[in-house]
Image (tube, rainbow, N blue to C red; front, side):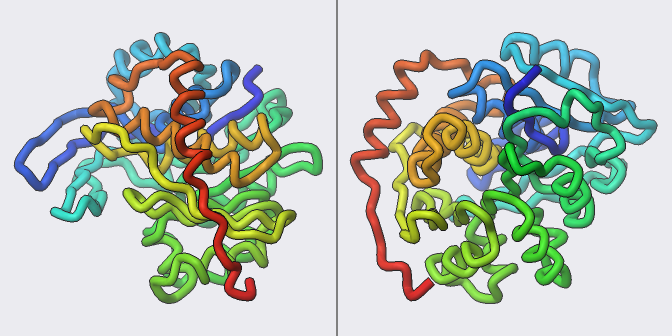
Length: 307
């Protein structure tokens, strides 16, 4: 059985970069990218996701090379098909195809889980509708395990209070800068992460893309900036999800949120060097450790702004 599970979606992505390059029918999904991020550091990683009735059979077959514990729940709906549209500054938006399955139908539910899958050491709940994330957190969180959560920007507005209540029942809150702005109400990542840390049990993070990440460790009561690793960028799709999986795996190894953020950073650096999830290569642990040493050397401790 896996010691860490990621929960989210499988998707089929059509990626459109601003320079005109397009990559059509690319396998992806936040469950897959976050599992690969965790797998950089852990051997026993699993992912739990619903699978639509038009997902190509080869999609799951090709994942065998990663040696993940894949637990699909088959549902009678089309899978999620996305356009991933990139802006000149690297920001992006996802737009569902007209014939795409709906996120509500394709998001894993607590009722889909088997008893043995509820005994793992850690779970990452990837972006899904907030109500479904809340249901999963309630089903999975125990006193002796760790749960992290990355919100979905489509279901933040109007659910800010619900989301902060959900955050109070988990260990790690891992939004992007854009998601943090929606929850906090303005674009101020340092103040936002300190505010989120007042609600979450162990640590809050704000992912800053090319600017790295901010992490507030509740126990240590300090705020740190974690830089990126200077990898060659090919495709940033899934980098935030890979960070989340790497973060949670790193926390299992170190029990230190700042160190866990360094693990997440390294996982994201591997992700962005390849196009699509399936082209991501399994790297030797030694290479990951080398990158980890670089990131650790560049941690910056910051003032906590009274947070």
